[in-house]
Length: 401
Image 1 (spheres, rainbow, N blue to C red):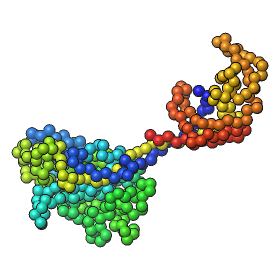
Image 2 (cartoon, rainbow, N blue to C red):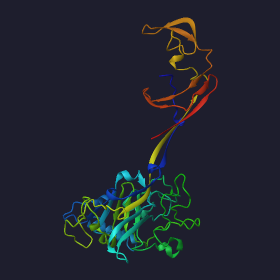
Image 3 (cartoon, rainbow, N blue to C red):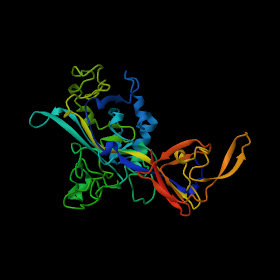
Image 4 (cartoon, rainbow, N blue to C red):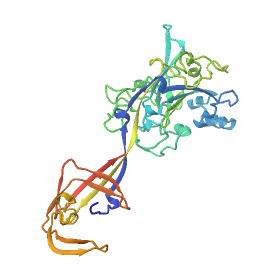
């Protein structure tokens, strides 16, 4: 270990950076990585999943349902309070720290055939009530089901902590009310694109997933929700869950198209209380086109920047022992023997070397130590850096983790 120099607090900076999950940020999830579980609010229905209601902040008790009803009276949010839901789980290996709540496209098969007699597909899109470029909805609606939001007139940024929630919408149920004043947002699919970086992230276009009027001829603004819109589900962006709440979609969910063992189609294992209720748990679809979810997610990377200075008169003598004399392997690197000696308290005798003629050395690595002199990290430049005796040299070290 060479000489040590204290690093002052003002020389250190810690900040976070958002890094696209697996390099690209976009993931398409299907098969066993996208599972479905039926849940009912009634705790006495023979199912063990009524506890999911409280886990997802859905109204459970009579008092909670009455409070929810009065809070969202004459508001599309009132439709989220249902006695039966479908919980969708995205495998945790398929997303980063948070899924961006503007970017979800989610499809699943319907019981009802389409006009040509083939299996219909329900497609849902995520959106916000607060039309700002957060990674989750910074609205009072989202805060009811998630974390506290940032209050006040905030511009919005994906890196700012917010509710960690978003809402699902379906044109099958109702298109955006915003389309009445903005023809460019006629569908919940408006503005959705895959394999592009949403606005607000480093390297993004200002046009992508943007909650405003048309910015360019190549991009359509994304529709956002207003009080009259009808959310059909909730996205729990930090946990990888979606909850389908709208009874039309719950009752039209084709559970018989899926499987729980990968071998046979699923059939009821309990008597349903309504048309769409069933006892399926971790059901999935083997055909990639039957059920899928696409979205952008990111990892949060911590970056520690340390600015250090080797001042004049510091770190200009090599610590490389191959440069030392055999007479003084620890104290003579680059110097001259004065002919004098000193004796340590332990009885060891060493020659005294004159270092005045040493004018420079080359720095090939920098060590960072804690207050107990334990080595924490080593920085190695891509080439040796010359350090002159009378000239300060600055180094900027960055560590990401």
